[in-house]
Length: 602
Image (cartoon, rainbow, N blue to C red; front, side, top):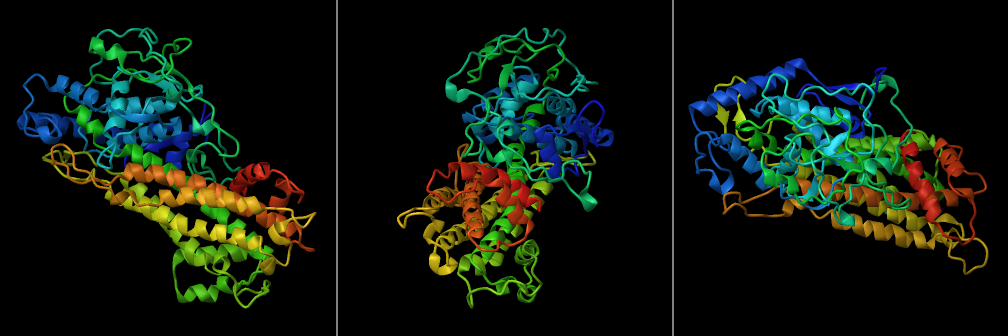
């Protein structure tokens, strides 16, 4: 529950973070609280790593990285080596990511570090969670990870945490209780630290370098949990703000200006980092930014060794996809009623014989939303059997439901376990060099979700075409009214197929990619980050496909003498524009898009 001074807490334990809680942290609907036991676990790992490093070489602490794995770091140069590692790896490219995706990354990384095993000083956990509480985030570029660690994103994050790069604001004020907590409690801090805002801000960049906050532009459904989930923080409520700006309503609002970091850079030349971000109009007030962390030997690689960005993006994609798939049940049910379809294909007896959980759920939801019996009583149908868009819906859509559930399971494993290389053993006696950072499970789960989404999206377009066919509906072609040459909803087939083409391109498996890097030492990659970005784009395209079907189904039902007395139609007909004259339908699509979250909650 919410506290008097702000949002409710999500307690990070390193072992129990859910997708719903992660979404709440990314949205600023909850604030992180660190379990004392988990922080002590991280501290034990840090002390063990220091001891192990003193006894013998550890990769990335006493050696270079990648092809330089056998190059020793000079004694006394370990801290400078870590700083060079962060600076050299902060080479991300492309657009700056939305605040919501970066905040999700921060939450994932903080929780992973609390799982123990990284050997990083706990001050980094404090700083990561403080950034989430204060509503600031590092400027992170889109490209740089290949599914073997989000190296560039986390290097940019690391430089921000130590004070070398500026913080960005999501345009979301910190809640009243967000008094800063020293980020380096119990650990060394810089002897002298300038007041917040005294460091020069980066020069303004080109227009395409602006920071955009997708969270402020999109929307969520009003529904909240009932039953056992009621009142739970971070329930995966209907929200797909992560899917980007609504194509019907335009571009999101820009983020607030980038704030100068409170710490002076260790290297004088580091102040002029080529960041394409805007300078702040006024410096931030003291205490509104996390205190900079002093970099210790081994901290750099321990921070970098994670796929936290890909995991954050995957969680956002999964949450948005889950809501869209639930909305699909209502849209498909309305289409089935609009064409006078048969409910035989949705009969419980049919799906009991092939017990796939997703297919049975899809069929059951359509029956429930139309108020028909378990074996199809109440919807006899006008034909002996319907086209595949209706008859095979449970089978195709069920696969999408199953893939979405599998993606959630994979994300919740990965955000709650250590992946760092080397991995400090829980008992502190050794460190393991391993490949746990290779994100094949995540990449494959994302690819499977994208392919399954394509299957159900293709049937949505098929149903849309069927709704315009007078031989199937008994209604005018393209549901037009007026002169015989009227076009009605004809153009929505083009719009839906255009979005479907984007979705189809996103379904090409990213896991099929290949890369050989670092002089052949790293000869494979999972490309989980690419898969996450593709899934986000695919879900956004599917949102448009589904809106096209919804507009058309509601128009068809309004043309029936007796529309079905079901909640989905009552809700939709009240929200969508009336009229069957030839007119621009962009506004109808915008209204349908905004309605989808509410349909998902039925």
